[in-house]
Image (tube, rainbow, N blue to C red; front, side):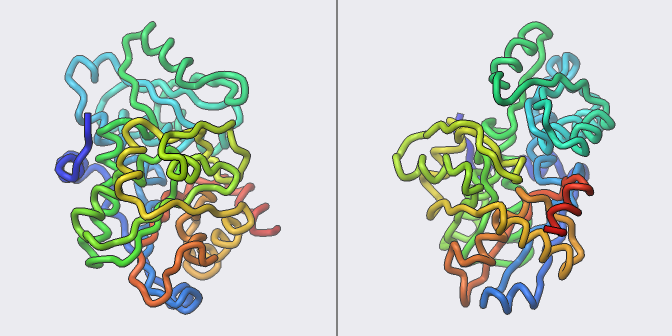
Length: 318
């Protein structure tokens, strides 16, 4: 099943009134630092604290009545978990979440708080997709993966749809990249609404499977990366996300953990905004010059703000 901008538009209709239309923020300091005009789409202020709520809400809203009654299963390190749990609670759909045993405590607590059943697994020894398939088959649950699902991709694209509707055409769009749901959806929305825009994905330096995939022309799988960007520790792009990214993205660049910490500090100190490490990927690319932005109108997706307060304090103190 292919995904198009029409699906993004349909998703926007489904989630209207449920998902927040998050603000677009600007900073004269950031503009001076980069020589560009930056527009930050503030998804840390989304319900459940991240853009993931958009795709989760859309995917659950698109279920049949029978599927809604049986319930859904998702696998996630945190943000998709919280999003599915919250979207399910709001729409009366039972949820089961397969989460790594070392997922951030704040994300586990929030997911459980939204009413989901949590099934832990060892991300370094077990295949989360295999664990999820087994449980789903046993219980008759519908699986909503964190990124490689048409309804999830379409839902994520609504963030960029809102951004461009608010600020107008862009020269460059920078998007955080893990499995590619956000980047793929962003590509669909940006290409339809700002046809000349250059779209760049930004992933952790320790986990550049997307960069390798574009270079090789096929999906490259890597071992589980080690990075503070816990929301982007994926091992490969998806069968739905990769073709869209391959067709529409200008390229993929990376950011180091140190650069992510620097960006986190900037947002806390100068914009009074908490952005998690993964959520800083796109901004780090602008701040560090990984993508040329001087003199351009640049959209920057801040993808989430779910960082443990203790971890945030450690990062800022480093």
